Image (tube, rainbow, N blue to C red; front, side):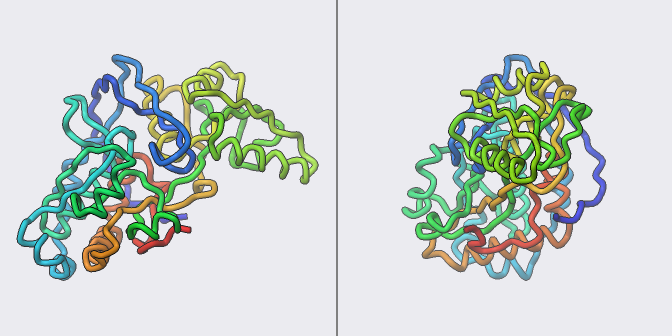
Length: 322
């Protein structure tokens, strides 16, 4: 498991996110990448969003790494990054409906500061990201996209985060669930058709092999239904993706309803910054900039501010997915 970032004093501001598609139930995809969907937050629901301004301002340019940035980007002073801005806490819009925020947005800004350039976000459909990159319409993509061997045939990836299945329980963890093995004999909710459901079924088999009671798996059509069942005690746990589970536990009931069981993501895999395969020099520069951010601690502080430090990577790998 990644080392714990330095303690950070958190300054929080409350914002009302109307119409935000926040609750992601994708299977190891963090948003449109997976099989799940998104549901709007309740109107007027408070959402604790970290003020990371000081963290971003503290990032210093790495002259050695910036010197490897291809000349056309250095001269332009800007990198164009495409995302699908609807997946909290990865990337979404602030209360004004036009300012991109999220831990991915902060990482992109920090990478830009390492290189001495501005990163401009462009919102587009998830299905258009790879083709826009291949056509040269944008320079980078960053949208909770899984780095997989299949996608590596189309684009290159610089891996920046490890997501996977996470267990969410009621606040205070009354059923004392500490990991997959402690789900045996418990009622567990998943969204129909996701890898969360597949994992629950696989875990059921492991419980049987160990001579333990079976899981009772409840598959529903939405994460909202699962949350209602967890709140009322009809299930002991929900399986969800790491960033979404963290965000839900932080925002639902103003953080009083749920919590995430500590530990590494289950069946984890990396999210990657996409780069055109014909632009290897840019991919290598982005990799070095991210590694510099990891090394000086700025990376860990950003993830900790958003509460997703469980998904931190120790190394910025190029095409590290499987």
